[in-house]
Length: 163
Image 1 (cartoon, rainbow, N blue to C red):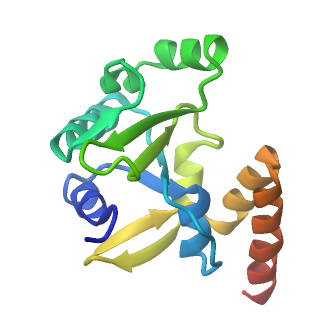
Image 2: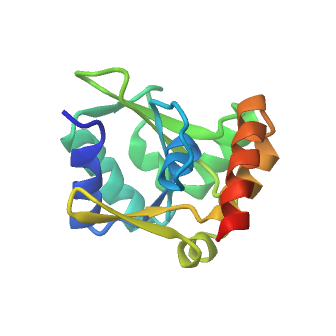
Image 3: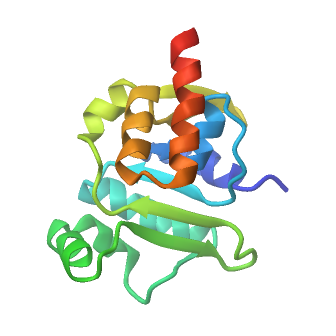
């Protein structure tokens, strides 16, 4: 079984607007990076988030915190999560494989439309997988600044220099 395959296929079929970020995005940009979780940036509009929340339930993903995943569609709720709880991502885990973790950004680091225009499209599993573009990915990694992010930046910069 390939982790996240069903998710990518269903996201495409349901026309849910999202972008792959984090370590998986680094891999999609051809930099080898060990990672297990999948970081996603969603278009945080009500209709899109509600379709996503329904899909998570259908595929067996459960929220890590005891809240309704549809609350991601509420900008007031997201603001409370970020200011009062320090939450940066809303996490889901698969009910049959807890290693399959999906982290959804609670607040998009850049306007979604801007990131979507600059995305990298990767064909896999018979669908197009939208991935955060190199410029935005590097900026996101720089903002976090962990050791692994700094290493990722150095590798991604080499790729940017060769394109």
